[in-house]
Image 1 (cartoon, helix red, strand yellow):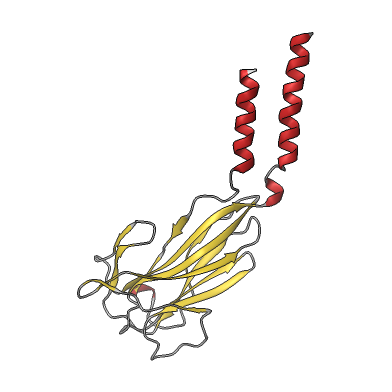
Image 2 (cartoon, helix red, strand yellow):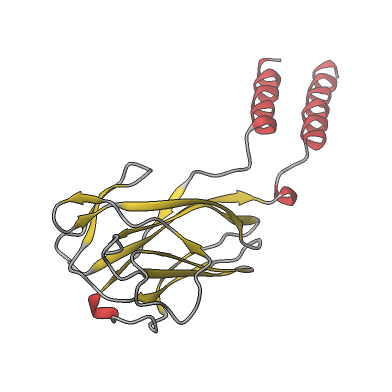
Length: 204
């Protein structure tokens, strides 16, 4: 009976446990060696998808050389039905397209060249099982700045050894799709059936 109770407790926890995963951050760096125009479209990396899961983007950001006096940085994410870009910095030089999201300039955190992150909350979902490419589309110009500071998740970034650099920043989670989460009725039926079978076996 004790084992059956433990099983019921475990299944109850499973019933109320959310399908949402831990919040994760992906923050790839772009730097001077990659170029200095808005025509780069360089692949920085990717957020890998998982079977029976969807990538849910909660916030985007930019750190480093994208302050109020810097030429704007532009990052892009594409894949799984998503295709969007975000920018921060001074836009006096323009760009050959209009980014999807415009963030505030990055804040000064370590004078004179260290700048922290600027953020924007979003609610974006990739298709089930799909991965997401993160690209750097370029900058209007570099100003010798770099990312320095603690982000929203408590991670310290110190890119002082790499001036003329910036980071795209994505806060996301991997969320199980409903089809991958057992229905409460099915779990309860299994638990009750398991307990009944145990009792019948004991009586026999």
